[in-house]
Length: 154
Image (cartoon, rainbow, N blue to C red; front, side, top):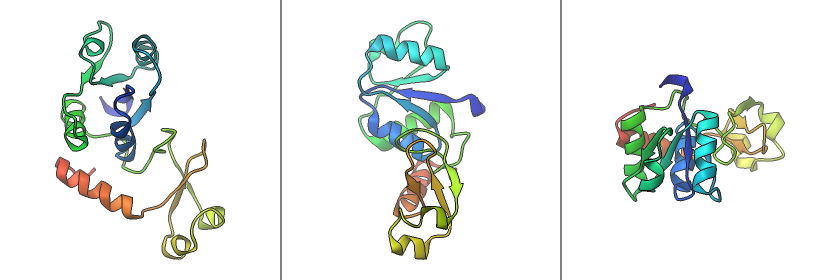
């Protein structure tokens, strides 16, 4: 599916959506949209709809992936097995906005990160939409561990 791989998670898959973003997947998420709105958005944006709802997954004219598992790691495995690894690197998207992150200098974020982080990190990413700042902290190790368990390093 390459770089055109775009996902839309339904309201029951918020944790999965956040982790997919951490892993680099372009993943829209709407926890209030009804089935019709989700179907319209998936079609309009060319997204694969991730859902645990069998009826929604069976709708014609939609690219869907029915998520069977209730556990996060198994859900991630289902996505990777069905759709392949993300075409984008881990930690390249905002976990909240789903926007691609921009590299910024330590000086640009000095007032918005803890002093310890500023002293120990040299690479910072920022969401151009919400302004959140990201760096390779403990979450980066958790992502690397998850990728190893999923059988891939990227």
